[in-house]
Amino acid sequence: RVVEVTAEGIFVDIGEKKEGIIALDEFDPDKKPAVGAKIVAVLEKRGDERHNAILSHRKAREKLSWQWLEKAFAAKERIKGKIVEHVKGGYIVDVSGLRGFMPLSLYEIGGSPKHYLPPNAKIKFYVTDMDVKARKIIVSRRQVLEEDEKVRREDVLKDTQDGRVTRVVVSK
Image 1 (spheres, helix red, strand yellow):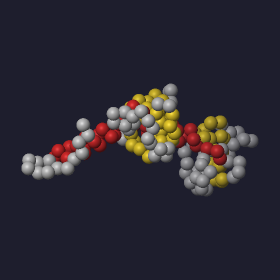
Image 2: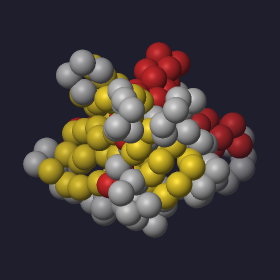
Image 3: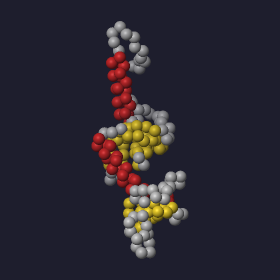
Image 4: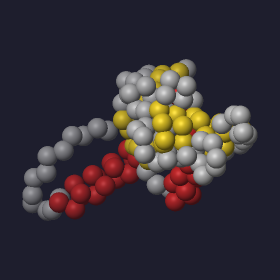
């Protein structure tokens, strides 16, 4: 629980004689926690009579994100994220505070030789490969688009009947 917010850092009650301290740079400047708020933190360095315990909010959030991502990967769930930047051969994607890679071949149906998604674009994707030790996450937007296209195609075919006119666009 946050006890005090100062220029030194954020003091947190950890159930010991002295409070723990979290550096201010671990929080967004406009999203500092208020006094009394509960936050997650990991102990980095134990304190003593003269020094406060040093905690890390960023590492705690990262650990929780990896656990959540592992569950979503095992359950093959769709995940929301946003494009951080374009890189050679794909995109860097923000996955709940973690950075993943989406190759150009996995971002569009049929692949695409160019970048079309702007930075900060919100997208849905599946995690196709991950390695916690190597801190590697590979995501695919193409699987989501293929599933959505399959559902749309089934809806059109369901509504199509003999003697009835259905308007469609022929692509191939």
